[in-house]
Length: 389
Image (cartoon, rainbow, N blue to C red):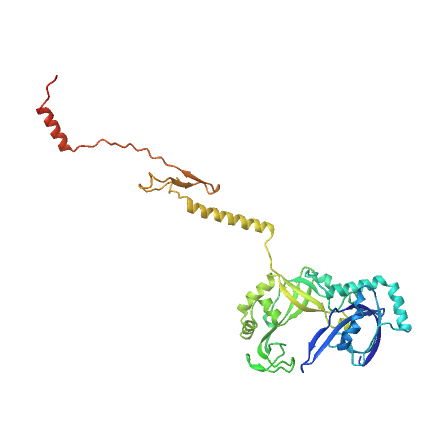
């Protein structure tokens, strides 16, 4: 569908500020997005208005959150590069109070379907201002979603494993370091990329991986590209290319084990067919390696093991046992009179006590005479005995 179109619709959302975009020639452009809807399709349409229209004309729509306004656009062109959307052109004008049968019908429709418009607006705001909370679904619930109840920019998460990862599903090649487009330039060589049109590109190893994701409710097929493949495998693109090119199946076995056992959070979203043809198909949008934590029982068991280890360490430092399992206290002869020996209690109680050893020693202060002096003394006594009074 080509050409230019005049559109009358109800405004659901207007971006708060214009986005500055610098072209390849260095020219500054300003763009602002307006989300519109009508009774012909449940899928809202995004209109990108450029430069002058993105300023004053959009500012007049600042009360979009308080009132559903019917607005007209002239000479809009279609954009199908990223799904179906509309964009302003040089001759585009925004009519803030359109007249005519089409406008009158829409104004009456906004009055009778207020709840429907509020629901659509709430979904737009939820996507435009996402929270940090992940919307986690099972594969079965994801596959039950209907095209009429989705926006093209909505994202969901599924927790999966990859039970049958195969090295044959890994594609290793040389590509642009920015856009990953395939190139024949040797790895590590700077070059100008004709696809992303960047002059600072460098040829680098690039990898993709096709796999079947599964949970308890079903399976889905996805393809990860370079950065996500590195994250999924836990290796750099160069390492993965080496494993692939050398057909190192032994090294890939460890990667396969991780894919089978480690849960992965995969972000999915609708393909461009949703906005182009109103057909819902899912595609890979990103992934996170889930950091698993021990449950309560495992934490308690680990804590108990840690406590027991510390008790054993304390016991080895504080007490010594003899070979007969009897407590033995060792002290030096010089310390026995001045210091008390410290003996730890049982490791289970982890209480320290001081065992004071009181050494009872009999100190004899009477000097001991040698045997010679003793005999001499006895001899003198027998030779001269003093007279008795």
